[in-house]
Image 1: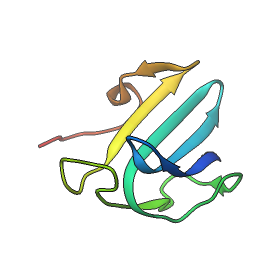
Image 2: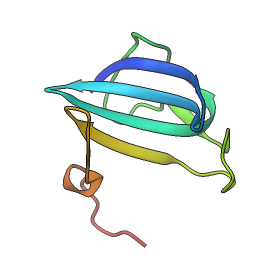
Image 3: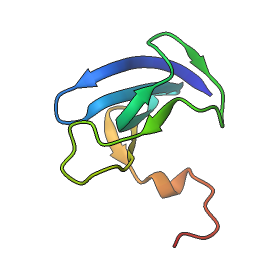
Image 4: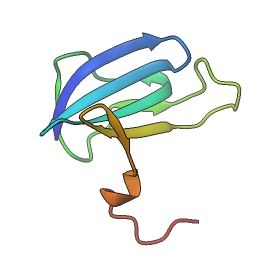
Length: 86
């Protein structure tokens, strides 16, 4: 769960959403084709916030995901419960 801090175009990332999860944690989702939430919206775990796309990307459609604590990048595998990655 969290609150949307930013939801708009950002150079180099295309359409991007940044979510504040509290305790100095935030997540970044970029290259969306459509943003479904706006700044200051509350979001719940599992809620759809955007659609995957390729805005400002040279790789084609994909999701860029980043997690940060106190502004420092974190390994997202440390907080995502993924049982099988293929």
